[in-house]
Length: 404
Image 1: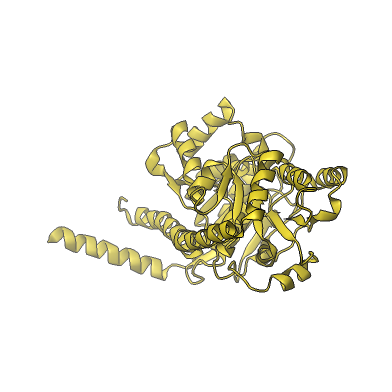
Image 2 (image 1 turned 90 degrees about the horizontal axis):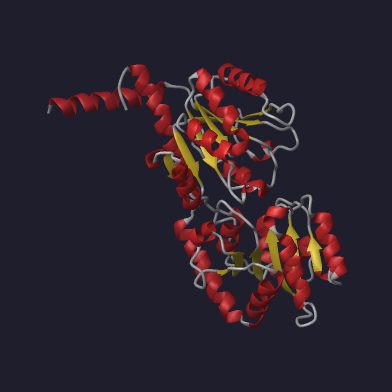
């Protein structure tokens, strides 16, 4: 009875303390503020939906190349650019970040991916601010695995953070295998806005808006045009199908360093007039509504936002066989995976989809149902809200002299 009274008193005092506190100042630290990236998209989705009365949000980018600040619709949001100097480790960046954390009275830091890990963790520890670290996927240099020095750094610095948060269980298991305690690693899957991405009946109008032909079978992909996304395979697959299926076209929404090469491949294969490069545009939900089939031949994915968006739109999907895709959908039930995602194998599966509209309908309907039931954006935001509250609550408890 006495223990219950003590616990009730503690809970009431903590709740009163938090209620009296100003909003939690959460600072995200990102390497690049690229507007169209999946990681950035996830940050935007969470930031725009966290309770305004309980959170204040800032974004700190370690590169001034681009920003996504205009997509965050919250009052009193700061976007800071703190460029890294040189190609090696810039130790001055640790000092500059620590100063920013302190001057802005940050309550919790959330760093993202390897490019911020070293700097943000050390800076947070210097200032005594709790930090969680998010892992969203790999860049092309990380697909074959981490070097031994990098693994050692991950283990050493990983012990210092409050939580490692991954978007897929496959990524979580990598950290655990490196030696991070399982209870310190948490998987929060990406979520999709199923109200924004939904099946639509105005395909012809959507295609007109993007300047796409209305009377063709259209397969499409979304993402940065770089080596990791592997869109050369997609363009090559259209080259294989060009003569057999004359009314099939492909469209790519996104931009990046491989665009000139992809254009050249399309010209060499004689399919330039059937390959549509749309660049980066913000209305991806309208683009999804243009498609008959969604294709993503990536070499690696953490957990693809665009796959979830395609599923929520009710599209049949073809992806490379990656562990993260198998966490999102069941092959042959809600989508298709290719063990060897090459031009010929992708072309064969695209042709099968083209010839079987009932299969496309079945896969798309099942994909939509799974996206809505298991990957809602509300579930994702609630998970991050709980994570952030828990670790700022730990700070409050410590200040009151209570163990957590």
